[in-house]
Structure formats: C-alpha cells, structure tokens
Image (cartoon, rainbow, N blue to C red):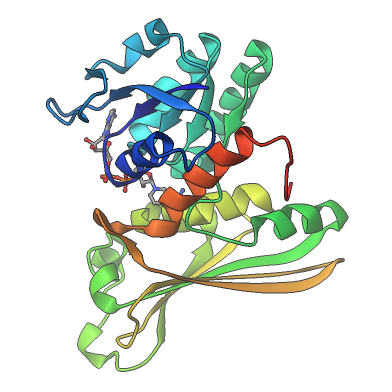
Length: 265
Ligand SMILES: NC(=O)c1ccc[n+]([C@@H]2O[C@H](COP(=O)([O-])OP(=O)(O)OC[C@H]3O[C@@H](n4cnc5c(N)ncnc54)[C@H](O)[C@@H]3O)[C@@H](O)[C@H]2O)c1
C-alpha cells in the first residue's frame, strides 16, 4: 500500500521507521504531514497542508497526530477514496462523529482501521459482546505525578501528600472519563468501542506512589464468563506520555493488512 502519515511525532516516526525497515509488511510511506513546519523526515515528501494528501495517490492514511486532526481529515480522506487508520481514538468517543465517520466509510466503500493501541484483550471483548456483556471496567493506575495535571482535580481536589498507597481518585463512566482525563482518553475510547459503549464502560483511575509503569487493567463479565487483562506499559522512547505498545500496535495492524492469514478478529 501507498501510505501517508499525519503526525511526525512518537507514533508517526516509529511507524515510518518500521515500514522502511520492512517490519510492517510490504508497504511504502510516500508522504508525511504535520502542522509544525520543518518536522519532516529525511527522504520523505513533507507537507503542512493535510488537505493535499489525496494528490499523492494513497491507499491509506495513518492519523497519528491529535483528535482535532482525526475530526478534520478522516471523513474527507474517506470521501477521496482513501482508507484511514486512526490513533487518536478519543475522537471516536463522540458518538455523533463516530456515526458520521462510519456512514462516510460505508458510502465511499472504504475502511477505517482502529488499532488496539495501548490496550489489550479487545479481541476477546468483541467476541464476548456477541453473547452479551454485563460489565466492562478499565482500571488505570499511574504514579500521582502522571495524574496531577488533569483538569478534573481542579474541581475535585485531592490531598496528594496524604496518598501513600494505591488510592482511587476517580470513578465514573468512560463517556465522562474521556473529558476529565485526556491522557486516558484513547484506551477508554477503544475499550468502549469494543464492548458496551462509552456510557456503560466504567473507568477507575488509581494513584499509586509506588507505580513505575502506566498500568491498564481490563475486567469484563458476561454470558461468556469473565476476563481480566493487565497491561504494564512502558513509555515510548520518543514521548513519555505515549505507551510504546501504541506505536507497536499500529505497526502490527499494517503488518496484518499485508498478511493473507488473519489472526484474531
Ligand atoms: N490509541 C492509543 O492507544 C494511543 C496511545 C498513545 C497515543 N495515542 C494518540 O496518538 C496521537 C499521536 O501520539 P504521539 O505520541 O505520536 O504524539 P506526539 O505528540 O509525539 O506527535 C504528534 C504529532 O502530530 C502533530 N500534530 C498535532 N496536531 C496536528 C494536526 N491537527 N494536524 C497535523 N499534525 C498535527 C504534532 O505537531 C506532532 O508532531 C495522539 O493523539 C495520541 O493521543 C493513541
């Protein structure tokens, strides 16, 4: 496939490197776009005008930039006959936008790919959802310093000095958590899409002074039985806010698109 990438950041750069090294299957990255001038990558055409991407005759555009980029460009790209992979999954927590995106893809006969990102267990949740899920919960545990900046704590103050062990600092539906904790937004959104939607998916945020990784635990219960999956994510080498697994998941999805054998759903 001829691939364009929006966002020359941690995920975009890793993905381009992976494609170039042949790790991601038989694909070629032909252009990269970013809002920042001079963020280009050696040997690749670069543009700050994302709307010009269709002129590069692309099969797929990978959005690895920001929710605003997904919102602004995904539908026009589909309408231009180009498949889209979305990393800023938080944009899809907006049910109205998600419905429009789906309809645009259907009308254009194109596909939208959403990698599992920093989360795991989504294949099992999707399968389990067919028989009915009673409960899906995401428990995110981070060191207090990784949480303190969240806007939520301006209106719900926490005595951080008093936290000496794992402490729940937020509990609520994913639909609200994505607004209160922008840094948790992608995992909450992707889990919601796989299972029972943002209003039914529960999110708990735990501050743990002893935490050294970003931990996401997924728990689900339903007619199939129950599952519990724990991710202990290390940061990406280029962006401490992004789990390395998110970039790896994007590469794995590209590899899957080039593979005649499809493993998992
Ligand atoms: N799905 C997941 O599990 C998951 C995990 C981590 C990050 N993400 C998301 O993926 C995206 C990329 O993450 P990253 O770590 O590479 O970020 P990053 O900050 O390292 O890089 C983002 C790049 O996109 C550019 N950019 C921002 N807005 C843009 C726009 N409107 N148009 C064009 N370029 C724009 C920035 O200049 C920057 O170069 C973010 O939205 C992040 O939240 C998803």
